[in-house]
Length: 56
Image 1 (spheres, helix red, strand yellow):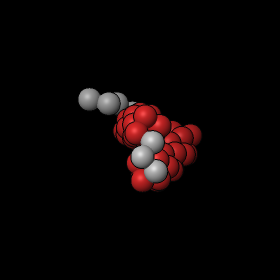
Image 2 (cartoon, one colour; image 1 turned 90 degrees about the horizontal axis):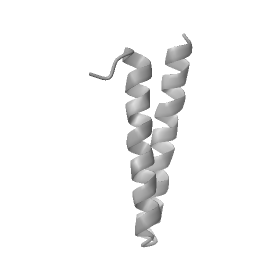
Image 3 (cartoon, one colour; image 1 turned 30 degrees about the vertical axis):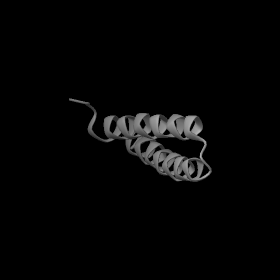
């Protein structure tokens, strides 16, 4: 149960990071946008790990 709650939370953070990254790229803030894309990727990996228990 705890793992699925953590997975949902990190999936939500992934979605928020993608939305913020899109806004940053629209305002031509490339460095900040890239940082949020990397954050979204990290959150996606953490969500997969929380749901499945393994990464590979």
